[in-house]
Image (cartoon, rainbow, N blue to C red; front, side, top):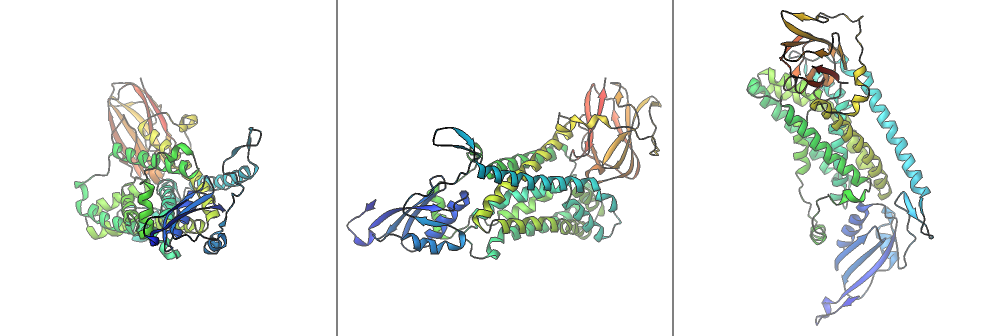
Amino acid sequence: MENTNEHGSDHLSEQTLYIKGMHCSSCEILIEKKLLKRDGIESVDASLKDGEVRIVKKGAKKFKPYELDEMFSSLGYTFSTTPVEKTAVSLFVTDKSGNRKISPVQAKKLFKSLFFVGGLIAAFFVVEDLQLGKFVSINSGSALSAFFSLGLVAGISSCAALIGGLLLSLIKHWHEQYIDAETTIQRANPHVLFHAGRFTSFFVLGGVLGTLGDAVTLNNTTLYVSLVIGVSLIMALLALQMLNISWAARFTPRLPKFITRVAAKDGANQSKLMPFVTGALTFFLPCGFTLIAQGVALASGSFFTGAMVMLYFAFGTFPMLMAISIGGLKFTSRPHLTARFSHIAGMLILFFALYNINGQFNVLGLPSLSDVSFAKTRVNLNTPSTSPSSGTVNGEQILSIIAKDFSYIPTSATILKAGVPTKLIVDDQGVLGCGSFIASRGLFEGFVPLQLGQNIIDLGSPRPGTYKLTCSMGMVPPVTITVK
């Protein structure tokens, strides 16, 4: 289609070319941004669904396919004037007879992705079972190097499911925002800002904790549960979008396309500082190891000590998070790798999101996947304990628990009488990670930090109900407490 007005220099022509090699929505953005940098081009509309691009430019001369082939040679796109055979992008396709069947190509890709993700998830649980936290002993007198070690353990443990999963879910957005960047350094900009924001907030807010001490509290169960579930739901939505689930894409807040084209044409990058802000806000995401470091910072009574404790902890978490950033930059450097990254990362993020939400259901005392096996914890009679094993002491019910490694082991009956004064006695024999903060919504409020040895928690006179005893993140297999 051609539009001509009285000014010959304003003569516009429209051209449609077909593209081979598009893999995902990022391809649309990349093609549009690169073409809009060419002089004389008024608008570009690339479509993954139709495998084509419509170009409106000044003048009657149209592009030859080989001209665009040269421009996009390093990215693997080729252009033609005739439609190209579409490659199946869905697992289920319709053949010429109208029958639905599984695409062999997509099935093979899905199997490879599932195999890779399954291996990573298995490795995650292997690391969890190693219980590396037992090699890191932290208290108010620990050297700063100990907090760095604590951060290293946090980076490859359950904390990775929250912070690492969040970072993974952001990478695709950053890739699209910087998709037309000419160098790796430019594409790395949001990653650098994210980590810089994390270091800055951990130093400054760690100092604030040290200054304010007992005047502030981070012990708000409702706030923490809301934060984790909220972040996890956003992660799950982004994961579904990365997996090309069509209905999930409708929930993505997007500016009108004519606005994004103007932004691309002008070379503008919106919200450049948002990665910095996001990194800074991770200070408030509850992880058992983070809570331990924050507790020491609170008790330090010094801005400098609190700041350095949290900064060294952040340095410890950096290697794993940096590995995620480097992996994201590597996989998003080529269109076909971007598509593979989206599928693999999407499945990982979805797993982490569900893992986090399941844990928070435990904290809230709600039914969860953990219910399938958690109630089978056995009393280990060979484990020494200074806690009473059962019965009543001075007219009070005693519920005794051993906290060891990454588990809570009941050493008394877990069925209590309602309305009777009750004490929970926890014998901490070296519990790890978030297990250092015990939680049981309905029996007591907030997270109670455990110290080595005997910890006595007053439960008052509990009301009838079924309660879960778990850690602040809900990752420790819960113990069920029944009050009748």
